Each structure stands twice: as structure tokens, then as C-alpha cells.
Image (cartoon, rainbow, N blue to C red; front, side, top):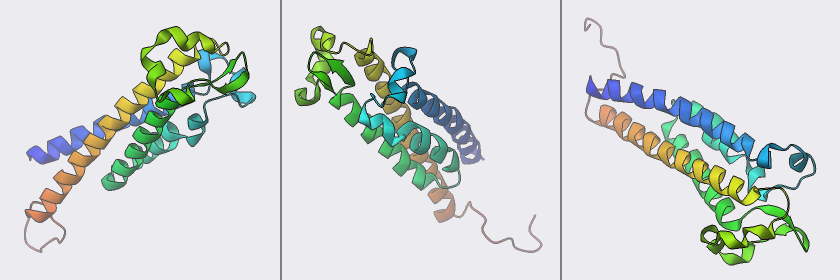
Length: 171
């Protein structure tokens, strides 16, 4: 009874986590709320992996049936988002459009004084840091929730609480 309530609670938690991942990933296409950068392909390349939309979003909704796949897809989102966070945004600098912080190995995250190297889009460094960080947190939670669901499902099967065969006469 307790594991059934826990499983239902975890399933209910996956839906908002997946929806938020989709929303946050869509926002990454519009730095500072502007659409011009998406249409001119001037976005961080990791945005195009659709980690929040497909893997941490839509596929996690399906993972209520396939919890083990939810771990893999959410883990994918976590790794790709971390790579995107460490690489930094694709922005216009004095040298043109480039990954201004790619060679810093993520050190730019703690040194906000160098963020002015990105001239355009406005506030793209903060935008990427905040949204990729949210995706990391959401997908991390999804990995944990899916892992708990797998363990719960396995314990039901292995401990005999899970009825696979319906026996006649037993209600």
C-alpha cells in the first residue's frame, strides 16, 4: 500500500518536471526574450540537442511506463546541459560570433567581470547560466525519481507484491 502511494506520487512529480524542462529548453532558443537569434542560428550549439524538450521532457512523460529509459534520457539532459553550461554561450564579441569562453574550462562561471566580452545577445551569459542550471537541477531530480521508481517496481516484482498472473478465485 505504501509503495503504491509513493509510486503514484512520483508519477505525479514527473509530469511537472518534464513540462518545466520543455519550457526551459524552449526559452534557451530566445536569449533575453528575443527571437532574432534563433532564426539567424546564433545560439549555443547545445541548445540544438533538444535535451529539455525531447529527452528530459517528452521522453520522461513516457518514462512512467519505462522508468529505466527515464533515467537514461534525464541523464542525457543532465550531461548535455552541463556541457552547455561549461562551454558558455555563442555570442558576438569584438572578433565576431564565437564561443568566447570555450577555452576557460568553465572558469567564466565564477568571474562575471569577463562576461562583457559577449556584446550580443544582451545578457546571454546570465541567460545560459540560469537556464542550463535549471535543466541540470530538473534532470537530476528526474534521474532520482526514475531511479526510485525502478527500485520500487523491482522490489514489487522480486518481493512478490506485484501480481503478474491473476489466479482464479482470488479477489
